[in-house]
Image 1: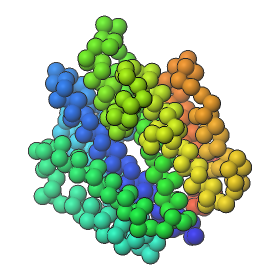
Image 2: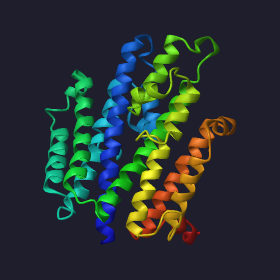
Image 3: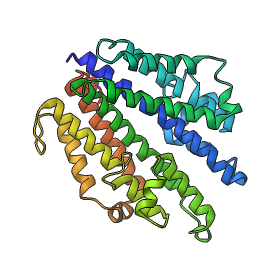
Image 4: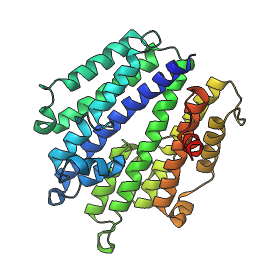
Length: 324
């Protein structure tokens, strides 16, 4: 497969997954405000923090109000990770590989983007935000379902899956990192209804609430973090995403499990092993933020290695070194 084609497929799915995650974060935040109306002014800034683009937000907006944050994360074309920008990038990647993906995938993604870009559709984001962001989530799920059911599960499909799993792992780590820091409870709030509401929102951000309750009866920060990082079966846990990404990577390269033929396989295999042999006690002792920050750095390293190995993209580290 041409490296250009593989790169387009990989990023097409990363952008779709990114758009869906942003929509989910906003939707859960809206529900949290219904349960905690007195906290209305405190829950929008963390959404910007999750993206890691707070400086860019502050350049264009004065205060993190609901209207400003929703516009920034949803429609701002100057912000490359807004939902509309992600869909535009996904559509552009899909357009360049029309011969690889199915016609159903292209038609759905094209319609999805045109609908979001239509000015007549955009007022719904503030007038009926619950319905608006639910539509985006369902459109993203439909695209994933079309990909699985109408596209041959060969090399191209495996690149798409890797992109999706890498993006999902990154976003799960970010929501947990920010929320764990913001919601560290005061002593008099532990195990109170407010504490439970907040951590329920964290689980719902990853669509994990019902699956978590099947495994655990109590909602505590430690158990929520353990579930979202280390659970082997939940499809949005970091460990599960990395495991599935590694399987797809080995299918592409043809190397057996347990071996590594390139830098991407080596880095991803090492990360998977660390997730398998680390537990929540070690994470808490190390520091949750420090652990997740290091994890995000390693995910970026894997992404760069995939780009260098399969897409013929020179890692930025090497470029910086050569310029020095």
